[in-house]
Amino acid sequence: MLLRFTKMQGLGNDFVVLDLVTQRFNLQAEHVRKLADRHFGIGCDQLLVVETPMQPDVDFRYRIYNGDGNEVEQCGNGARCFAKFVRDKKLTGKNKIRVETNSGIIELSVMEDRQIRVNMGKPLLEPADIPFTASKRANTYTLLVDDEEVSISAVSVGNPHAIITVEDIDTAPVSILGPAIECHTDFPQRVNVGFMQVVSRKEINLRVFERGAGETLACGSGACAAMVSGQLQGLLDQQITANLSGGSLTLEWHGEGHPVMMTGPASNVFEGQITL
Image (cartoon, rainbow, N blue to C red; front, side, top):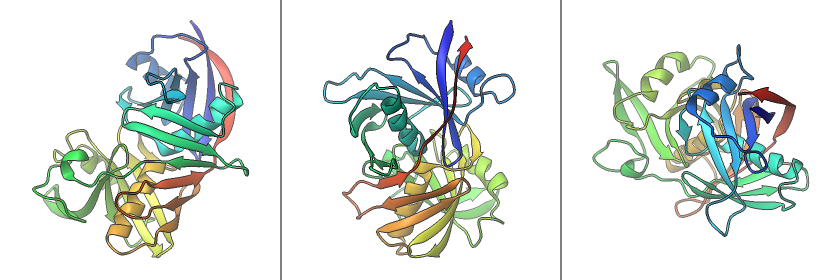
């Protein structure tokens, strides 16, 4: 079957986006892996799918697949690309768009300057909700990794994140601790691993090793999780800038019981058709 697609990126975090509202296709894990392959396919960190909603009070269903073919719950950079895509393709004319994900409903707002603001929902902090194995909730936990103790925070922003505070992200052991913690037995659904350098109370630098994808140029949900972690530890203010390898995001969180708000860009790269 000939399938139309759009290649997009948000701060260098790149996606293949499929409209399965106006075209029909039975997507399987093998198709995701083929599309995501940077040598034999199109190439992307994640595949995003636009579907008709299952609930009456939302506009679309938003599905996310990692390059390994596994479906995941949330992707913040992808959500911004999703909003731009459905507007560009005239699937909606709304500036405020409600979409259902596997972790719940999120709200996307297209701003006047074409930046996209995403209501990422309330972060989950109880270990069982993340999910993370711990006897009780804490702001930081000690994780045993290859016989060494590593201090982490654990937060879910629609998907699970472990955050490590480091002195310098340029020298952080991302390639070593990233894969080791991603598959740690204390995270039964695996985990995204963020390495956060606190520059000031209003700014962080961040690198993220994403589950099923490896280190990416940016991770929106990872930036939100890092902000929550830093704020709970008394290190950050309620509005900050998060600098990632691919660019910067504006984040806002007013504490427990409130959603995390993320604002940033989304761009088209190219469009095409592929036979699957």
